[in-house]
Image 1 (spheres, rainbow, N blue to C red):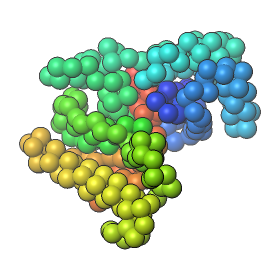
Image 2 (image 1 turned 180 degrees about the vertical axis):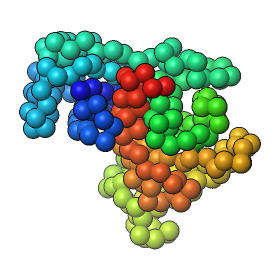
Image 3 (image 1 turned 30 degrees about the vertical axis):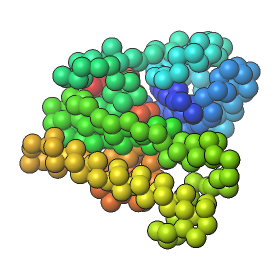
Length: 255
C-alpha cells in the first residue's frame, strides 16, 4: 500500500492506495491540524481504522508541501507508525519544467504524472484551491507556464474581512446575474467574473500555445473543482484528487 499526502495552504489531503489507482481511500483535514500533533495522530488513526488499513502493510509515503513549517510535524507523527515519508520537490521534477525561467511550486508540476497516465498532453490544469492556478503542459509533457489568482473562497473571505458593512456573504452560485441585495450582488460578481474569466483564460491559452492538431485536455482539480465542472463549459475533465493520484504514479516511478 502507498500513502500520498498533499499539505496545502488550507487543507491537508491524503490517499491510501492498495497498489491500484482505482482502489483507494481519501482523508482530509485542516493543514494547521498538524501543529496539534496528538489531534492529527488521532485523526490519522481513525482514518486507518475505519478503512481497515494495516499500517504495517504500507510500503512507502510520498508527500508534497507548500507550507514547509508544517513538514516537521507530519514527519514526527508518521514516525509513530514507523513510516519514513519521502518529500517530493520541484527539483525532483525539474526535467519537466522546460524553458520556464522561474521555480514553479511542486504542487503544480506533479500533475504531469497524473496527466501522463490518466489523460493526455497537451493539457490545461485548473487547480481550484486557496489560490487558483491555471497551468499549461505542452504536447511533450513539459510545464510551459501558467497563471495564479486568489481562490474563489479567498475572494469571498477578502471582501468579508476587509469591509465593514459587507459581512453576510456566502460562497454559493448566483440565481440571477443582477443581485437585489448586497449578498446577492457579491455572489454574482465573484462567480461571474471568476467563471467567465477562467473560461476566457483557458480559450486564450489553448489558442496561443496549442500548435498541435490534438485537442488539449482541460482538467479541473482541487477542493473547489466542482465549480469548474459545473460552471465552466471549457472544462471537460473533473479530477479533484489529481495531485494525490499523481503522487501515486510518481511513487511507482511512472513518470
